[in-house]
Image (cartoon, rainbow, N blue to C red):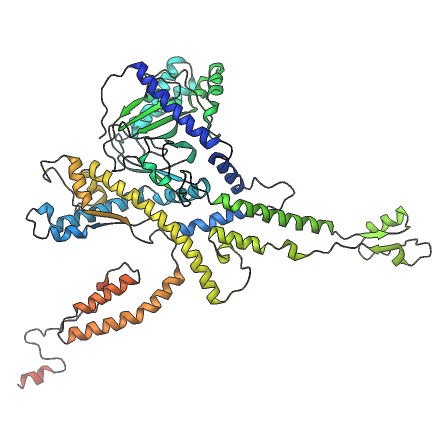
Length: 633
């Protein structure tokens, strides 16, 4: 559990620290919100994704959204598979150990248990959706942030946007409603809400205190990294990281009843949340007569992870001291629970590029070209030129019915001189060709034509293969970045589990056969030393390619190439076994072949098994011999 110290701080000093934190948050916000800053870029990117950039007269073909939707499945398509292996260097060192906890069998069983627990937790936490949101945010906002922590049943824990279901939340809300009723005891709505919450708690068979892994997306605008960090890769060396979390004022009043909430600003759910609107919101609070609606509005709570102090503080603008402070214990080596995914890092600044800012000029050029073609076609509407005709005759012609005979007075002139077809402005299709624009979009996005839903020009198999390999190279680089990102999270989670889970919780996830450490393991060491020792002999990683979109064509091609080799090796192994020869070297060839083809599978199922000859029961004649013939012998 996390540690909350009982040291008494000077109120003036504590207020100075809170003010320093808010000054830093404002400094970071101003940098991001400056002209040409990342907030402006993100707002523009989102505008293009939603199609709000188009004017009324323009052709509304949203290439940005379609390209983004087509590209994401190639980068991330399914939940990752976590692998936990034993450090090979340590395997040889511990072959002769007499301590059962240092035996190779114990280490392998514990690593297998940890692997089962982590894959179970990742599946239960719906990490597929979380990581896909992170990929989308990285492309739109430059960074996709994810927060990871182990939620304990009791004690201090970080806040989460989507926490595990817990009875404590209902209790906090009930306490907040009670405070509302203390101010307005005739509020019938709050009375009914409190009654329903109390009945729900009474009818619940047991109090739910949730414990488990929480993997949460964090909006880009809700995370503030200390500006001392020069490069994105050094983000975890920052002195402080701030997370803004939105909670209803009512819930906060119930959880922190000793705080004066009268000067705390609220916001509107679903609106663009900007710190600069706090003062206007406070003024609105002072003149608002509908207290119930006001208490239901969200408040911006900042969770301050201060690495220089090894402490976490919960602060709110308008409150002079921290709501609570604690020292986190069940955290990984990097300490911060925040992980950032970025595909376009820069070597000279912290803020990476977004994918979309490279696509927007091509969207504008495509829209402009297609709109001009549309206008050109509209100017070429069918029309006629009349010479010397009366208005009544022209009207007869324009409103005529099908197969109607129209009498027109041409004053003796041929009809061709009085009425002629209008001349159309020729359309040069080359001037409105968007082929090059689409090719440029393929280059900057990494998508080939088939993935974008159109084939611009038929290609030979060789040309298509080159294009596909070029796309695969760029997508593979992004997939590699994503797998490193998930591996960092997996290692952090492994450390959290080793520090914060007992055998009871582990067996709930991995079964009664799970192997875990207890008090008898390294009895002279504390839990941190035990966890570090175990973590050092475990290698935690994401199975390569486990997050990518399956390529059925490539899989079939691989199997077509591999099958003759497997059959030949299987026949050689069978012949060696039949002759009583040692076929171990052939089995090793088989394992290596599967490994070189990237097939993570049990090679034993490809090895032919020798069938033992059936033994004849006592007193039974050999097959093909009748009992009468047997009696003759």
